Image (cartoon, rainbow over all chains, first blue to last red; front, top):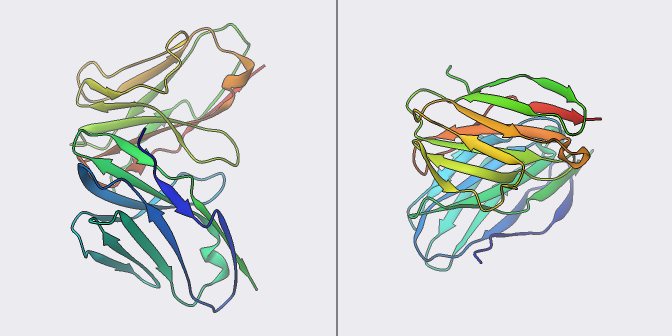
Length: 111
Length: 112
């Protein structure tokens, strides 16, 4: 059974600090890695899609990297703000069209 | 900006009744997903379509749930009969193959 793992499960960060968390995924037949931001009671919002080994994407203070050979991706948030509080989900898409979600990292920014 | 449409937005039903949800994906998106989201948890994939074909329905409770996407465009998810434990948010999402998913607003189902 393919499994995508995210760590840590939850994270408390002081406002203004930078942080990062991990998504680990099976690399066999890998096609793309997705990151989503999900606030409770809302639908997940797409952040990034990455496909190539070494890919780096950036959106404002949030960036992500991808290592397809070892099967992991990092999501970085620089200078955390209260509005960054959310659950960050990753999902790995494979060449057989299978999509597997991680359980998410819940980020709480303390003012 | 194109959006995924879902209806109804809210549905209240009694257990043992049948319910149906509709989803219209973004035009050109070949991949369509149905998710169930219980409060406080991440989305649980129920079924994934590639055009009109089912790619993954391993988590779909097939004794009571069914999904179809007959023409490879819009899709319907049905529950018959509904049970108390089916109360949840049902989300539809669409994407280009392998691309980011765009989620609809969801249907909030309450089973009494």
